[in-house]
Length: 120
Image 1: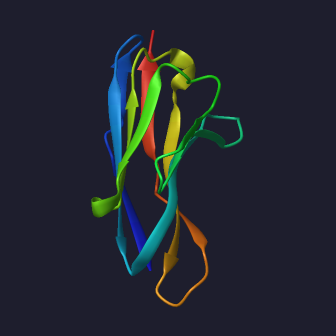
Image 2: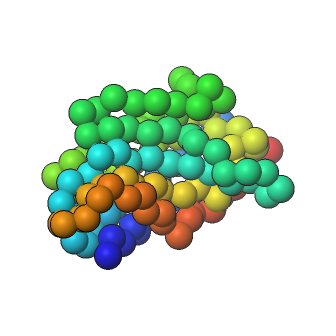
Image 3: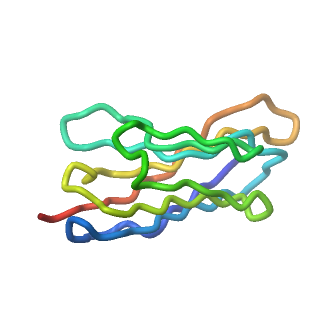
């Protein structure tokens, strides 16, 4: 089983910064991609940013220029540095990892979510 542990959420004022961290552990053979999604109250879960093993990244248009995703492949860890936060960034942020376990096909795993609240 793959376990994802997220950290770094919290309350911050608009214009402030937060850094989220997600560490994957367990019977992992190889990670294909790691990313962050978010879900605000009453809205669907949406992609924030994703990074593949080669380092290519993709961002939601609403966060480009303000949020940076990075990863440490040796530690199976993904980070999300969020700057210039806006109240509309308030949501539960979920880590997502697509990986192969030994002897299995590619699967996606989700973290438990971490709350990010941006106050005005």
